[in-house]
Structure formats: C-alpha cells, structure tokens
Image (cartoon, rainbow, N blue to C red; front, side, top):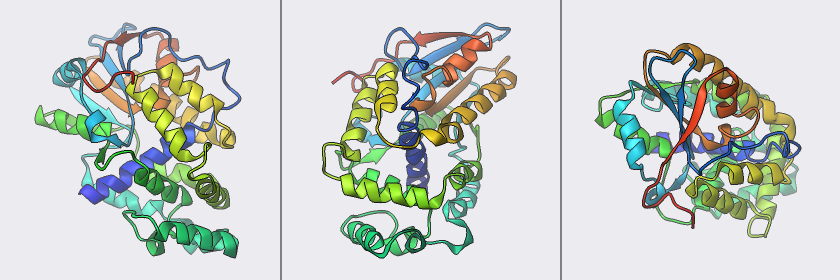
Length: 312
C-alpha cells in the first residue's frame, strides 16, 4: 500500500505543480482571501444546520512538517465525513485508476521526443532513484515523470502528504473517508493536455535542474509558503511563474473548483464535513473559498497554528 499511495500522491502533486504554473495572466483578478494566514476555513450560514470546514493540503512534504494543529484535530473529531480529492482509503479505486495513468494507444516517451531529447531524459532518470524504473515510466503520461523527479528533490529523507496524515487521524476516530473525484477522472484531465506538450515540459524540467529557475527552487518556495499558511503568497507564486500552462488552467483548476462547489451545496447541510483539497484550489476569484462565498455561505478563517506549520 505504501508504494501505491506514493504513486497516487505523486500524481496529485503533479496537478498541484501544474496549477501553480497556470495562472500567469490573472494576478489582479484573483485575489487571495484577506485575513490571517491559515489553511483552515469554516463554512457556515446559507441554511446550513452544521458548519463544514475546508483545509488546504499539499500532496508531498517532509514528514516533520506534516503536523496537525489542535484546531484541525478538533475539526476531525467533530466531522461526520472527511472528503479528499480522491477516496484515498479505497484500495480498489486506487488500483483501478493506476492503469489510467498510462498514455493511450501504446504511446511511449520515445514516440514524443527527438532521439537526443529522449536519450537526455533516459540518462537523467537512470541517474536518479525513483519508484518506477524508466522502462516502465516511459509508458506513463510524462507529467508522472516530472512528479517522480519532484519527490527526489525533497530536502529531507522522509516524505508524506497531509492527506495521509489527516486520513490516519480520521480513521483513528472512526470517520468515513470519501472522494470528490475518482482517480480515473483525475487521470482523464491529463489526457486533455497533449502528450507531446507534457513531454516537452519534462525536457524543460530536466534542462533547468540545478539552475536558479529550476523546479527545485520553485518547489522550495511553494513549500515555504505552505508552511507559513500564506495563501496570498501561494497565489503570487502561481501567478508570477513563467511556465506556459495557462491554457490548461480551466482543465486542471477552475472547472474542478466549480464542480466541487456545486457538489458541496448538496452535501453540506445537516452534517459537518471536512473537505481537504490541494491548497492551490483555495485562493482566487475562481478558488473554492470564493465560489462558496459567492454562493451565499459565510467563509471565515480558523487559526491553525502548530509547532511546525509556522513562517520560516
């Protein structure tokens, strides 16, 4: 299960990373929610008999940073249901979805790149330690390869995800885990981004490795913003990125946010929900928090301090 979870969480990280590159032209329109720095938000009003809560996760971080605040522990204790992007507790769902991460039509990375670029990517991977060998990985969507490299650049030996930490705490309290999407649906989003484009971005990733504009520095900045629970900073990093994924922001971010907001209108009410989704989905005009506010709900920040989730 550990390897299975690792692969799925890396796929989720790839979505977080891509959406962090997808909003370059929306800086002034998409303002992050004002107020204290926090990842935890209370949803109330608009006829709700019980409040629900939204928490911004990150799909890969150092274990020492994956700490639940007292506020989050209390929310988990009082929640009737816990929703993630995926039902991470359903092994059959996860296993069934893994096959969807492969490219369609027996396409391989070699079909998408020049011989020189293919050799460059192959040699780079053979020098790295990844969950999947390159011979297997080259049949998967190229974004998967990028996310595996991101795991290798973590500034620590042990990595986990906030979803895993929250799920274990929820299960210890007997809480039921559910998903807003299926893994097949998430994998399908990536089929709408041309494989050749994904492959070219993988080559750029490798070319920039170790440079000032490399993904390592980008991820380090994202991790720092996440640890400080600064949604405004997270959004700024997303907007200011020079990467060219803006044409896919609707696929990876906005359409999903709108779909989740619509689902939550019918799911919230007599039950207290904890909705834990990637922090990149929270801020902005088309972010989940603003969509819920626009729908008539009261959205308020909840203090979420812990010994590790602090500004550094």
